[in-house]
Image (cartoon, rainbow, N blue to C red; front, top):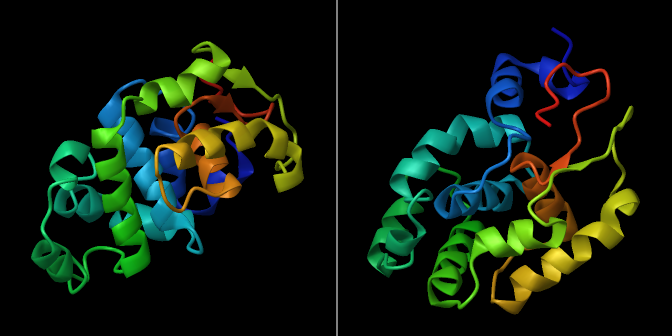
Length: 181
């Protein structure tokens, strides 16, 4: 099988590429989980995030944002001492904030994520990595929508990576056998 070149750097990336990345996600809790992992990824390699993902999801309840929105500060302090997760206080607080904002919002993450494309995957048919300037105009309305409901750490790179991960944009290389469209 031929895959996107970036996926062949490690077994973890290969597994992620083949089983998760770019497959359309419509479940609200799963969308929140993926967006949260993208927040944690900023400044780190995706391999690092994948290493911590099971513990982040289990310990921080990333797959259950209503519960995450209710955590106490003492729980957060304990998390920040737990070496099984990424212990960046700003990122942890941002993800908790995002859970609270989503919990209290009249909007939902599914609509913010999928409504702009009418629930249709955008195929980019790329043959080389996309540069940040190539997607800026596309991603800015998403960034603005997330910030409008109070989400933190929602820059264009984080949000575009999220859109790739949940399948809104199909950025598998044209030679990749895993195009999911």
